[in-house]
Length: 239
Length: 116
Length: 122
Image 1: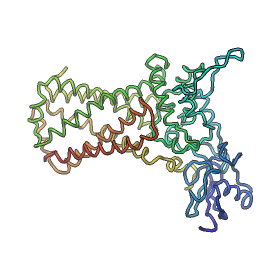
Image 2: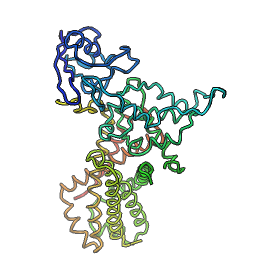
Image 3: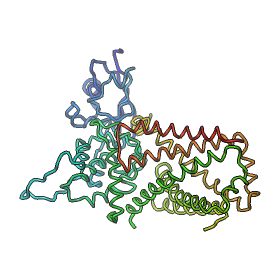
Image 4: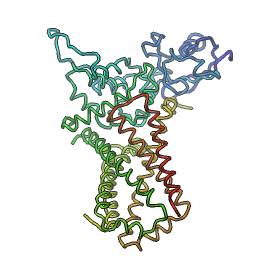
């Protein structure tokens, strides 16, 4: 094992350069450890994001050797066995500076996909009874753990090819709501996720499912949306 | 019709025509593998197909399904890899579908001697 | 690399699913380019067997037989990949069976191409 890792880090905005650093190698080192070492000891001007550093928040998502990952959960030994690392800002999003991206387009697309719960009951109504083993609830639960980290969005080729494609995360969240029996916004939601910018643009590459650090399957969720929107179209509910 | 509704129906039309094509292609592949044995002359082909209403109906359906299915696929490639967007790409789709249908049904008429 | 944007999605791809997609798209493109020619050729039969026969003579060359085999491969591969997509989209996506589908599809496509190549006579 080499004593140092040769690291290339993106500096700048969408125009920029790859800056090289040599970082001491340590046992059980993560890519976030590497970035932190650079910022603390080698170049204090490096901008990057992190929060929990234990694989719960998704803030540290970056492109590591070309793949979107949570850097706090990516071990250097696994991704850079020969000691060479390339760290870039999360893909398909505007670069604010260095390793920091603007997540606004990602969350805007979630809004456009109607990926928000539409309540129908009030505090005066009894609790909704939702059997956890019902098919709809199982389908919702399969995708509910998404924390909006953007890794799937960065991994998706269709996001690359179609700038207005809503993307796997927004569509996955919409699918969990399509399966929520309490939700009152179903028709508008199916309208929102249909068409070339929505579920119909997915080509089942499964890059999203492969990339998801929470092991969710947006591919399956999007396939479900295709079925739901097809049924809605045949009922004349897609305008 | 809104863009969303049009695009949703395009997707449905492509999947529906795909299902029809799955059967047509299967029949066509098996047929071809069987008939190419022992060499193939124009007389061989036309001897089987001329005046045959069954083959005429089969291939006419095949052509219709292809004329729906193929242009929608080309539309997707044009948008994703050639950057063609908007209603222009839908116009190309309709024209291409029309050309395929016309040439295809003409070929069915030629080979079966039956023209609808 | 001079921009952060280069090759953004490439390394994230699932190899089996990505190659299935490429095969599906390329085979579709090949078929769509072939079809008008196919229809035009068959249309020469409007003049009876005498219209079609010269073309069939031309197809008896080995290089054309190879091309025909590749077309059969393209058609069978496109069909197999399409059936997988129809299943995923209309029945449901199952993580475990994707690779099985892809393997089965590849097998069937090659089988069809071989059956054609071995049966066709110049």
